[in-house]
Amino acid sequence: MKTNKILTGIIGLAVVGWAAGAWAQNIATVEAGPSDVAATLGTDPVVTAILSQPGVFGGHTYTGWSFLANDGSGSVDVFATAATLTTLGYTPTLGDSISLGGTYFPFHQIPEFESSTPAALAITLVSQGNPIPAPVVATIPQLDQTTLPFSLAGELIQLNNVTIGNNLGANGTVFPTFAQDTVPNESYTVTDGSANSMVLFDWVSSYSTAAALGGTAVPTGPVDLIGFVSVNGTGTSATAEFTPTEILPTPEPATLTLLTVGGGLLAFAFRKRR
Image (cartoon, rainbow, N blue to C red; front, side, top):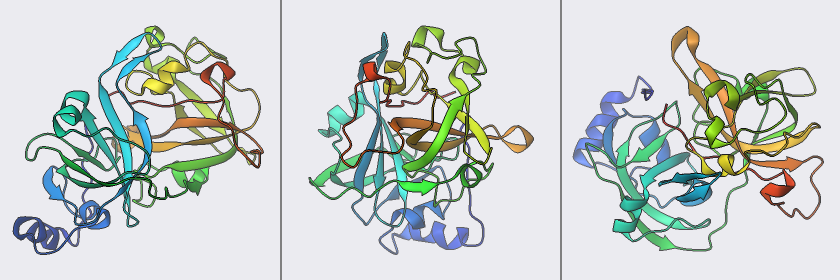
């Protein structure tokens, strides 16, 4: 089930703006309004991370795209099928500046544009090769919240000097393959040097690069993680989860060369709609 997030206090104003097209919206104004509405940005966000892409990864065929787009006021996840983007004639590439419209509907508290009622997804390439903002550096206490602030939700996040351990399923020290895809097998804890812990969710069934990690060893020492945060569940059962898109050695080298999945250090995470 998707999670609707509504920031009260300016809802009425936001609805008028959507209905009348009273101003050019940026991501921050869209996030401040209601969900499950048609929204078109007046700004051109830049593609900052590819979270999911079509193809065969870890023995499973993935058919959707998921990528983050940031306009400086905020960041959203754009979720689309391969067929939709083929029809639009667009292939996401890091550094692309795009025009963006569609249905704004947060999922697991991830601010998201998607193609569904009431609005079809609309994307046009504006320019390429634009600077990509650095990930937001955050700590486990900042991320481990049941209601995410927009300063973190939908952002590409860097979590430094943490240790992955305590797999909640049967795989233990090895990342699961898609065939081993059950929620306990995908869930780990991640802990920092001050003993703060939260759930690390290896989102195998929807993020194809996580599936590519399947069968490789979980790092045993401290690492830096880059990824995104979501909240699974609502109320007293809500749990913040960090999904990695990259697992990097720490301390990071001055010139970083991303290793292959075979080296056990690079993970691209792709989403399951659960």
